[in-house]
Each structure stands twice: as structure tokens, then as C-alpha cells.
Amino acid sequence: MAWDPKTYLAFGAERTRPAADLLARVPLVVASRVADLGCGPGNSTALLRARFPDAEIDGIDVSPEMLRDASKAGIDARFIEADIAAWTPDAPYDVIYSNAALQWLGTHETLLPRLLSFVAPGGVLAVQVPRNFEERCHVLIREAVADPRWAQQMKDVRDWWNVLAPEAYYDLLAPGAAIGMWETRYFHILEGKDPVFHWNLGTGLRPFAAALESPLKEEFLEHYRKLLEAAYPPQADGKIIHPFLRLFFVALKKQAA
Image (cartoon, rainbow, N blue to C red):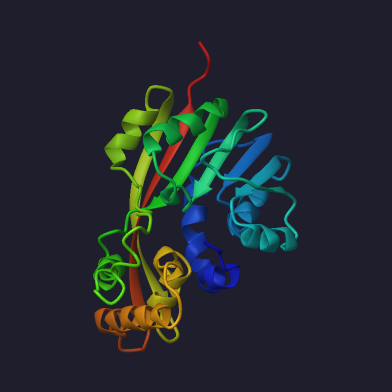
């Protein structure tokens, strides 16, 4: 799947807010090496640069389109094209940070301990992942996908919902780190025509749309758009409220004995 940075950043302020909230809970004052996993177009990397002005920062992403935009943003960082699931750094990091990326990867039972192993003793693994699979927008994706007009074409689309329960992440990371965890349900106030549709077009809807060819693809997207239009009526001032639940956890790695 190709990523479209312009579509993704149509709601840049809303997407960056959880990134800032996650970074605010990283307890380190200084860091020498920082990794931004799933850095996208660099909005989170810019936050890390401002927080750690003297650090060596690596932005890691599998999307060349996202990395192209990140490289053009003027951020003092090294941008690396790599699959997080297979990525292995050449040295430990003081901070490994990932905002809204790991939900695209499976086998968190092995992925999270592996990422923590790349953190230096006394360093931090900081992660935010969506937990909004039961919000109306995702319930309606599943409803739309099940329509017999295209259900067969989508039967092999990989399920990207890989997020575990908070308790599972605690058990995975607690043996090697002190854990802080919390959830925040944002209520994004969006403007414009069909904003929830365009939000999901940049993220969760992508694997399903990519499975179809025209004109069926456009029929599917229009069907989903109409479902959202009925499910997200405008407020009195015409704006749309988009609820969005996210899980955060910060793991402070134990010092070597």
C-alpha cells in the first residue's frame, strides 16, 4: 500500500496532538540517541528534535512517500526506509518512540520485547496505538466490507488490528521495565465536507480500498462515505465530532544489575 502524506496530514494538528501527549510523559531530560518508529512525514520527528536538541535522531518508516516528505521538512534527522518488524539498530537508543504505527504490525507478543531490547538501560520505550476499533467509523468499515458486491475481493485483506489489551502489554514489558500506561479518548472537532471519511481514507480504510479496482473501488468508497454521513451528523455550527480512543504506554528500562 502506498501512503499519501498529503491525505494523512489533512488533519495534521489532530494527528500530532497524541504524539505530543506521549512525548510529554517520557521522563528523560537528555538523550544521545533517539529513534522515531513509523515517523511518517516527520511531524512526530519534529517534536522529538525540539525536545532533544542535541540528540542523534533516526526516523524509521517503510513508506518511501512518507520519508520523501519528511526529508523535505527541514528536520535535523536521519531518515531510514525500513520495516519496523525486521529493523535491527546497530547500537542501543536512549529513546525508542512510536506514535500510531505499531498497530499495522502483527505479533506484538514478540515485537514489543524485541523493541525494548534495543533500548539502553535507563532508557525509554514510548508507544501510542489506537484502540478505537469499536468506534462507529470502524464498525462501519466492517459493515461496508461485508457487502456482497466486493466482499469476495476483500476476503484476503490483512487485518491490521493487532493491538493487544493493556494488561497484555504490561505483562510483556514489566519484567524489564517500569511501566506507565493510560488511555485518552479524544474528541476531534473537524470541519469541511465528510471529514471522518477523509480521516479514514488516510489510514484505516487504505488496505480495503487498495484491494479493489475501479469502478468497484469508487463504489465501495461512496458506500462507506454515505454510512459515515448518517452516523456522524453535524453539530449546530456544522462541525463534526470524531471520538478516538488511544492507548499509551511508557516503559523505563531497568538498569543493569
